[in-house]
Image 1: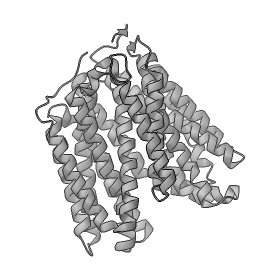
Image 2: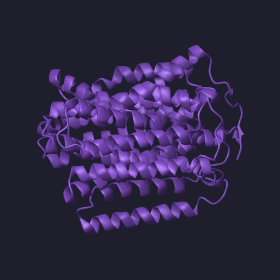
Image 3: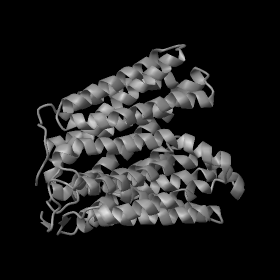
Length: 453
C-alpha cells in the first residue's frame, strides 16, 4: 500500500508552526467535546422554547451522537485517501456553519437536522485528529502530543457543566452555539496557515465496508439505548451483528480499510481491545457514580457535580505527564498501572458507606489519575504500531473503540442500576478494570516504538 509524495518530514513541524497547528487542533477538539455536553443542561429550555416534551428534546443530544458514530470510519478513510488536513479543515468549517444554523433554528426538526450535521462534522475533526498529531510531532514526542489531546478532551468534559451553566445564567440557549463561531473562525485561520499536508493512499478505500462499520456502530448504540424493549433491541442487535460480520469478511486483503497489516499486528490489536475495555469501564462508572453520589449518599446536585469533576480534572492534569512518560516507557507497564489505580478508586467508591467529602474527592480523583495513566500511553501504542500511511485508519479505530466502549458501559449501567443498584455497579466496574489491566499486561512482550512504514 503506497502513498503519494510528498510525505511530511519525519521530524515534524518547526516549533512556531507546530504551536499554531496544535492550538487549532485543541480548539477543534474542545468545541466537539463541549458541544456534546453543553446542550444537555439546556434541554429543558429547548423543550420549552419549541413546546415539546422532554422525550423529543433529548433527540437534540442523540442526533449529534448518532451522526458522529455513523461517520467516524468514513472520515478516517477519507483522511487516508485525501489527506488529514483537508478532512479536518472541512470538518471544522462544517461544524462552525452548523453551529451558526443551530443558533437561528426556527423549529425543532430544523435544529435536529443541524445537530446531526454538527455530529458529522465533529466526526471529521475527531477521526483524523490523532493522525495529524503524528504528522505535526516527531515520533519520539508522539506520546507527549497525545497527552495534550487527552488533556484537552478531559478539560473540556470537566468544564462543560460550568460553561453551560454560566452561559444559560446570562443568555438564551442559542448562545451555546453562537460561542462556537469566533472560536471556529480563529481555529480555521490558524489551521489554514500552520496545518501540514500528509501522505495519501493511492488506492481507493473500501467505502462499502466503511459504511457497514458505521451502520454496525449506530445500530449497536440504538440497541443499547433500547434494551428495555425486547423486540426493537433484538432487531437492532441483529442488524449490528450482521453489519459487523459482513465488514469483517471484507477485511482480508491489503486494500481493505482495516487491512491485515493492522489487525494481525499484536501491538495494534491489543491496544484497540484494551481501549474498548477501559472505555466500557469508564462508561459504566460515569453513569453509576452519578447515582451513587446523589441517591446513596444524598448529595445535592451541585455538590455531586463538584465531586464528579475531580475525575476529568485529575485526568487533565496527569495526561500530559503520562504522554511524556509514554515516549520512554513501554505502554504495557503504564497502562496496567493506570488501570489498577482506576480499579482501586472504583473499589473504594463501591465499598464506602458514609464517606467524608475528602474521601469522595480522593477516590474519584484516583480514578481520573488512573485513567490518565492508561489513556495517553495506550493511544500512543495504538498509533505508533500502525504504518504512517494508515494513520487515519488507526485514528478511526481509536474513535470507534472509545464510542463502542462508552456505549457498552452505559448500557450495562442501565441494566445494573435497575437490577442491583449503584454500589454493585461500581463494584463490577472495579472488577472489569482489573480484567482490562490483565488484558493490558498480556502485551508486555510486544515491544515499544514507532512503525515507520
